[in-house]
Amino acid sequence: MKIFRADLQVGLDNKFFEISGESLGLDSVQLTEDKIECTIHSEQASRGYYLKGKMAIAIQNSCDRCLIDFGSKQDIPFSILLTSDRDLISNDEHDVIYYTEQEDAVDISPVLVENILLDRPLKKLCSADCKGLCPTCGCNKNEQECACPNEVPDSRWDVLKHKLI
Image (cartoon, rainbow, N blue to C red; front, side, top):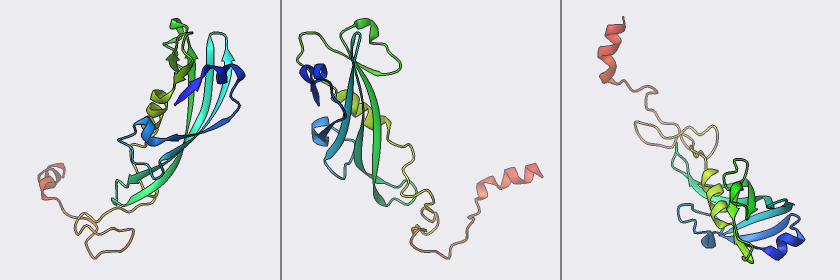
């Protein structure tokens, strides 16, 4: 996604964009809708522009406990500093994109992709109270109860249990 210098000079005031997931090259993320809704606000800074906004993205996930596919909608905030000052490249508060004064447009796609990938949860759950799969018979405990015992004895630990007593 490119932001034009003329738009930055005029100022973006919560401008709405629709971005194609395919155009961002999100091969490792399965989207339920190919469009990503993005709202951007820009502010002029002394040595560049600040872009602040959020993306709304619908992602298809597989639950880590019960393996059911489910969709989730995420709002991902971002903050980007566009600058032609090389001294500001190591800014910790914002993602920084360096551009030269000769460029008419700045591509912010790499930062957007990075924010999408970093915002993905480590543990993907269909619901907070997901019961998962039965370790014995493999049934989905969210859909049905099974007759399997709750605790499966593991004989590998018996030697240690006797030593603790």
